[in-house]
Length: 217
Ligand SMILES: C[S@@+](CC[C@H](N)C(=O)[O-])C[C@H]1O[C@@H](n2cnc3c(N)ncnc32)[C@H](O)[C@@H]1O
View 1: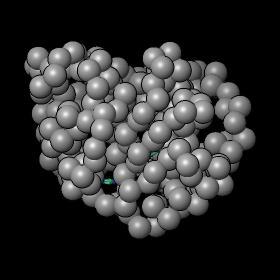
View 2: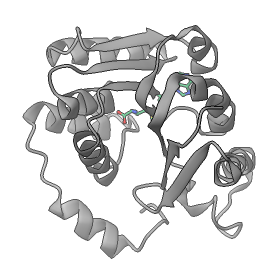
View 3: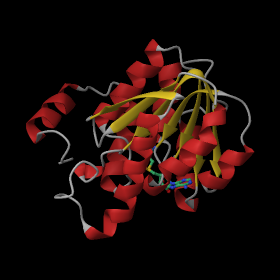
View 4: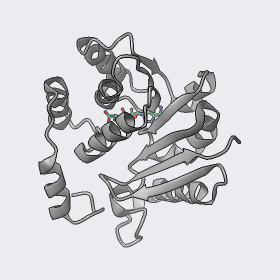
């Protein structure tokens, strides 16, 4: 239960998503059995459609975990894809490298170990899409760092922005999540008021925010 949309809506949509890729199916099962948080099925599907329909080739990801979304995005791009993904957890980093090798995508996906808040300052070039799926309390700080790495008309795709509904309603808010929720609200407000980004917030999965860069900052 995500507290974002009615359970019956979520269940119905999920039942319609058929994972045709055997490798990704096994990775999702592993993540579920081992409590590794990966993108919800409908968010994964959204990413695939977005990538395929927008000719997205070069992607930067914050938060690799076991490499599920990086592999999914690489497969959605196809041959000439280039993905750079950042993970700070040693164990996750090692698992991601292993899975990416098993998927034979080691030439297309580069995993950088470290805290994205530091690593982002060392990355060069421009990306077609930046997928933010790391620590929820730092999206706003990250936005400042990733802006220069995004092409004009590129997309920032941020996951979990409604955080189990807590971002939308104080009635759902639990005490120990107050700081994260406040920071997430700040991120969404900044984007909504920005002259550089045009943003849509959608109640998909745990909430996603899609922002396209409409002018250089
Ligand atoms: C939700 S999981 C990522 C799931 C992955 N994108 C997927 O869908 O397959 C979040 C990951 O981000 C990592 N993370 C959190 N904050 C980070 C940071 N500041 N820098 C790098 N990695 C971070 C965590 O260790 C965790 O593995």
